[in-house]
Image (tube, rainbow, N blue to C red; front, side):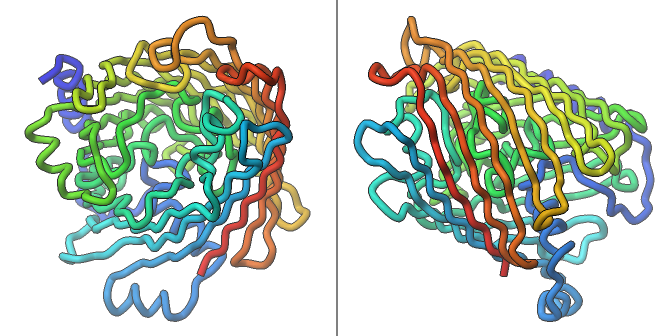
Length: 401
């Protein structure tokens, strides 16, 4: 096992030893980002709590949410197709399967599809030559198992262990405006600022988060790098036979555990083993993030990262931006700018640095529907020899059932 993996396991064990112990009922905030299943369900139920869902929870221990999201990307200059369009239907939630105190089964199943010949996932690289991704979950991969894992809270909610089929972006380098369903569309403003060589989705693994003190926390994880959402259980064989792992350790500071996703400063160190079949080299990197929620409506943030190999999109990247809750239509206004240097090991040498500016406004249309209008300006798309700048106008709609 790689030395880095041993370090992760050592730190995880150390965290278990130093965490304050308690057998009390635990229901405090977890350590995931806004799109982690339990956080998304809590957000949705904050607005919508139908009687039939309450009955499911009371009678069967099932907490359920269903949503559908559609995305349309457009650009003023493209290689061929002028649009990238697609949608995702999701059903997700928790199931108190064994009636174990403070533990639950977490699950998420999806159907991802494109409406035309180009999905949003393929639009950036394939149609505008921008080294990056727009709305990366919106691909054309059909039915998939995204999450299927056990979550166990411990130490009066100060520690959380998850194990099974994971999505590393749920807990890795998370902050409050990281969701492609709710926030920025450009991946440069999400996990790792596009510098992390992420494992495949539906990755079998284990992650652990704990409060070291009232303000400092630790999150560590190890997953298989070769997950396949269409065959999620194959990952268990991969995990124990291929030994190609993605490992990460994050040390962070927050004003309190209750505001861990809102007031958050952290540094994440990660390592990815070589993926032999995919011919992706091993590598490592560092990501950082600083964000704070002010006056219950205003969130500035600065984020960035650096990587050495590992097949990432960008080699180095810095983003800065702001989110602002408005009264109009219960809206959220977001604006951010990113500088990024493409990874030479992935895309070749002598590519220009890129700049991206994004502004979006998400407005509620009733309690079940949210509409997002998004505008982006991209300067010097690195693998587009024909254009020095590109404008994008994008739309997203999400409905919760």
